Length: 227
Picture 1 (cartoon, rainbow, N blue to C red):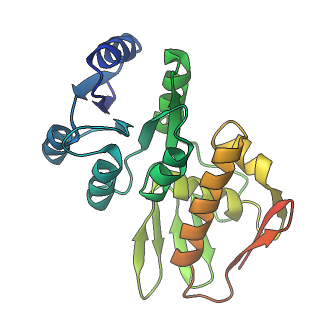
Picture 2 (cartoon, rainbow, N blue to C red; picture 1 turned 45 degrees about the horizontal axis):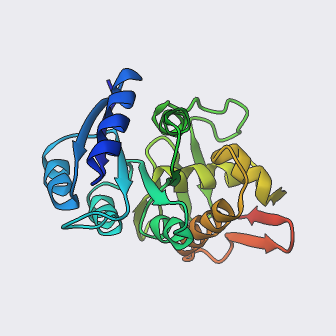
């Protein structure tokens, strides 16, 4: 049974969401403030974090930063208020993988959770095989969410690894932005486009030691990955 850390300070919404997710087959541990949630995270093993942004004691962004420093791999989904557009971008910059806008349906939330929790099958058509790619001076291991060179090792988040894998599978091709968004997030909208830019910037920084590796912007279309 997947175990979810759920942090929401609205007791009514928290109860309803927890109850519905438990009926979907998850074990949901609910906290109403970020500080208590962090204490639990340091002691318990969780499969996914579901974080409200506005929280007492320790806000959702600060909590996510602490979680991400300890665990790069665990998926983090933010719950953001409908009018707080900047929260969606800020959440991704501190290590979030996705966001759900309030008010949300349990069906939508459950779908997002399932996307993160289901194991990805290895693409049998890639020449490197076994979820591994040699990228210039780097070795990318999708299954282990790792990017290594002789000089450094990076632990990727789930979303970072998905974006890099998508680029690796389409090296030297022009890839449309909406194609990436639909394939990875399941939808195409303005804020997810901004989110994609955040992840591309992170990947460029991680790969910056090898000048042969480039993630180029193709104006008005998308990206081209070369190495």
